[in-house]
Length: 113
Image (cartoon, rainbow, N blue to C red; front, side, top):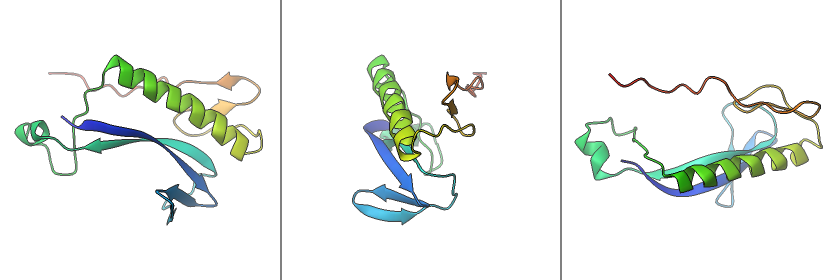
């Protein structure tokens, strides 16, 4: 199982991410904003499950869920600041300043067989 090492807020401004003090060119330009990244370490269970090397299974606790949810709220507020209070209507968590946050309805939960 992948191990959650850190929850990271990663800003993207002018098509560049700021990550660990470095500027990294964004491949896909979707405007300025602050994203929430889960820094995950591969574990022995991922090998036992015979997952490809570039995949992990992450089991999260309720505490992890709460921290991730809080980070998403911070991300939305910081993105709104970066965009000078101009909302956005595309992306996984669109925010319309007039109507507030709209959560994704498609959670893409894999069905167990």
